[in-house]
Length: 551
Image (cartoon, rainbow, N blue to C red; front, side):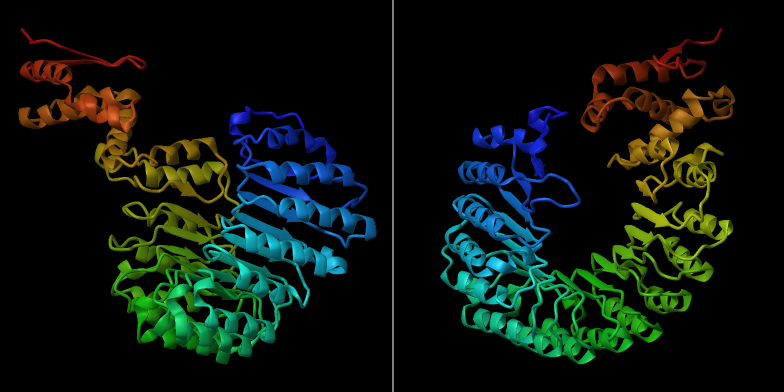
């Protein structure tokens, strides 16, 4: 593979065919450049020549020797035949000898079904002997032995416990969850801080065993992922009660893609956390379960009882309409500072009134929203979009806004955003424009990107000064602005403008230094001492201030 960029910038590589094997010279040299690598194991798919047996051996030997590789991702998309299985096992044996890998993932583990005993034996040895390993993931590894081999490996593991275990699409059933949680109850020091069991086959009984462990050692878990399983409201009530009372350190909790949950499941979660609302996880994901008005209202009541807002609330693909959103946001009307900092409403059924309600909250200066995503919602009129965008004009917290712009052309988007980010109707309007928003949907307009790029500077005073000077002085200078100014006001204005010119093209540290340099202050003092008669000469690329007393 011919690298198109300097080697110093290459930190990851995908090895999927023989054209990419030139990267091996970096691995063979124990180069610190490559730290993450993806290897495709299948041998022929859609007539594409993938990694051969010989090349797979070379890759394995190179990975085994490299001491700087930290992340290894193996992909196996088809069932391996007898010869391929033999080479794959040799590859796993060689990879397992690398004791420096921290993050390991196997995608498409069902490709090892024919050799699962031998393959999991090598993986088990890898987990047991690699003391630096922090996270282990198997996705699409549908085999009844996956939990048993993992428990055996964790029981014999030396060193610190894994920080994260992920078993997605792996056919984990209620009995498998029971086996895993029983092991963690007997060996709490070996339990991971984060566990994801998305898209498996366990239900309420599995939730019961998870809640049983949480009640005993709840503060161990920082993340629990349960998307796409078969639990119902009873299982969720059981696990939510345990989390509310015992898992005070839980940061992320995700459920979803299960239409059996619905309103009863969300109400069960909300009621469980109602007594201890501050124990609600900072990142809560409830996706694709068809939440109704009652569920949204119960969730809003629980969140509004907290003493501080959660970081993010994801409600994607829930068929949420205007009435459901109003039920949620009504709970924050008295205290908008408790709205989640990130609210994701992607792919719902929001209409005119939903955008109006959330826009009214954005106009409140106490609103804590920082990221709002309402993409792929039902089409709404241009006037509604305009009302929603203009609602952030005086908002000082929102950084990212993504709404359905109904296919508006870039010109209309630019007109909308210009009125919010940089209103040039007057100096005061420009100064009071939004200086916080840095991302607006998926607009590809270069003008929009430039407008938002100005707001990325953390020094908001500098942003306001830059906009005022650029749009009212550098582009279209008007001397009549100064004719009726009182001398005291004129002094402040001249100082403000001069420092802006001195700082526009410098970084923040240089800006502060330029504003305090005695030489610059001396020039300003000379200007102010002659404020009875002031003449400005502003050149586009080299701004100069000339002054002199009138006769």
